[in-house]
Length: 208
Image (cartoon, rainbow, N blue to C red; front, side, top):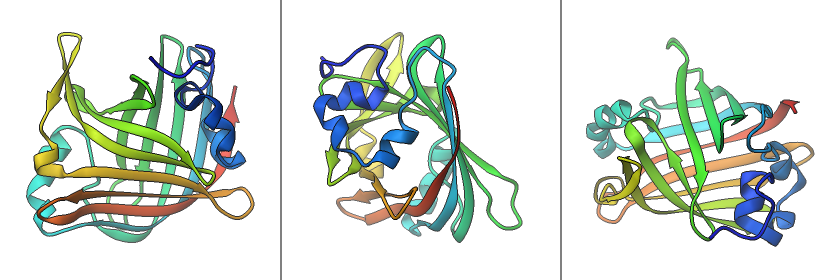
């Protein structure tokens, strides 16, 4: 069961319950999209770093098939992220547009659904999903990987991708003024850090 909050509340308010109020105002602002609406938010920023290890290179073809992870390296990479609710369901949708120099824009699309307790599942293509435990910590929204699933025939089957990709950590943290920072990494127990990126953002516009 998710935390006791209105079914019309934003996804992370439903997941966090009373802890939603512990998030920084700028974090709540860009995650305040109501489910089953056309609410949308755009944020713009710069990725200070987008990086993957040499070991991770062998995983990139598989990752691109599933529409997950960013296959390029770079610094000071401009990025625009569109967040959107959907009228037909209660999920939250992302379109992250990275603009690497001398490359076409790279889109990383996903959507997120509530799961049990304080967990959500973020899905990419082919029904592959990452289970994430969600907490509010010192104003930041923090996600910790809890394993992978494959949605098939309407059911989420455990998928042992942690043996390949390791576990994820993501945080979005209030910064100065109306800005927030984010960082993500994937760490394998044997091969160490495989992927990471971090950046700074401002909220550009909201609809709804």
